[in-house]
Length: 284
DNA sequence: ACGAGATCCTGTCAGC
DNA sequence: TGCTGACAGGATCTCG
Image 1 (cartoon, rainbow, N blue to C red):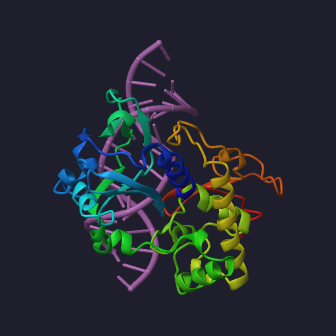
Image 2 (cartoon, rainbow, N blue to C red):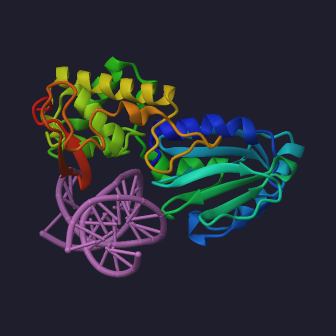
Image 3 (spheres, rainbow, N blue to C red):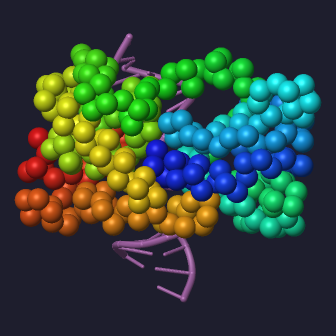
């Protein structure tokens, strides 16, 4: 379940392996993994990868088509991947054949074959011209990056987008149009650190509590990036390494265990349709 | 306009 | 031992 820290880690580990390489061929093993239709696929052939980066939970691969390269124009193509729960990348040797869950293969010639694997098949890839990004509603509706704002600015942003909202704060944190990158794990962890009950109404939180929440979200995301993300079951980065932040979880996956702060039992419930663990004594 | 719930999908695990 | 059902969850869709 790659959230912001996991996608960031994947982008950082994948970039040195594929930047500068050309796409020689592409193989689609699961057609529904391509969300954009196939009209742009031919442009990918011969295109050179110029950048690998992240926005929200999207992994973005920027390319320069052969046509743009010969005309000395800027990179003009973009692959946008959403890994959803089980998407992963790995660069295999040049002749590697697909694995059980391989959905897409990008043949990079002597540099190897980039596999997009995804057991649960929720993940997808959009193939776009770079200038089509501005017309993509999903992209346009994304909220700000939590680590690109100061703590004060993030608190102010939360105050403004949560104002008047009756939905619970956890659902609001998971809403990518309000804030980008936070998923179920880091929402639970941030709410615990901030001492806020997941079911509290978003619009009911005062400025002091929102400031605490803003700090908790930023701290948790920074620490998780420092530890290369969290590995639940099968998450691996593009070097095949597991993250380590799962060892720091205070609540996620710890239902029934004792709260590290007050010693009371951690409770499990459903909030916003998601499995949620919290400490009823520390979070109000 | 907003919010809640169902939906997609397959691997894993608890319980019988 | 082997089967069944619950569960995991991001974004989208439908419905109230």
